[in-house]
Image (cartoon, rainbow, N blue to C red; front, side):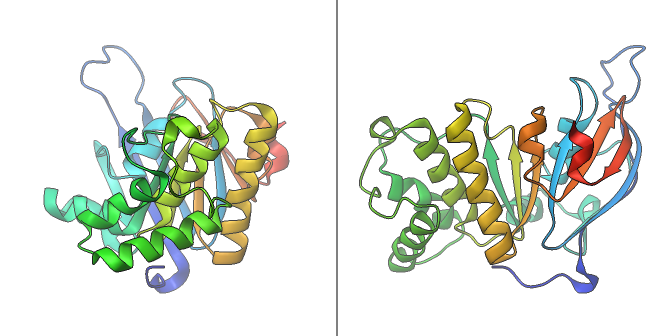
Length: 238
């Protein structure tokens, strides 16, 4: 796991605004969002389509830039970073899990998990050991030699979680991670998130439209029309 953040604030955004130039006469995707996420939190973001939750997630993940406003991630002013620095920040500080598993079909589960460490310059022997450890942590220690086609949807998502965490990021970003899963498998995957957050202190920011999935978080942020309209306990998901 990467080092601790001074003061405990991992995500700091102030008056964050995002305006898409081609969205004629449309309100801003984000209309001045200010909030903090502390290291070790488990946060769910909810809101209807067009509410701004996915735009917020993309900016937090350094996949998009705000039109204006301030964003600090792990104490770094993101807007001051160049392309290479942003790529390094994403690789070492962030882990991503998406609705689609995005596994490479010709690689085994173990090889898929090892892949991010290649770009991080980790030696091969350490890559294999850390990948095995992360597969074990997500309950797949015995399935490392299987290819994605030999795994269930829930198992594939667990491989994706292991891959997201193998570089020991400070923050795990999960965008609708249970959207392609049946109810019981979704619960199993959310149990993995919960355990990793509680036992390893991994900060989780989860985007979902499902109230029952949001209940796994300890904090809920609701977006509407580019603004935060609720920031409190997960009971607000109902």
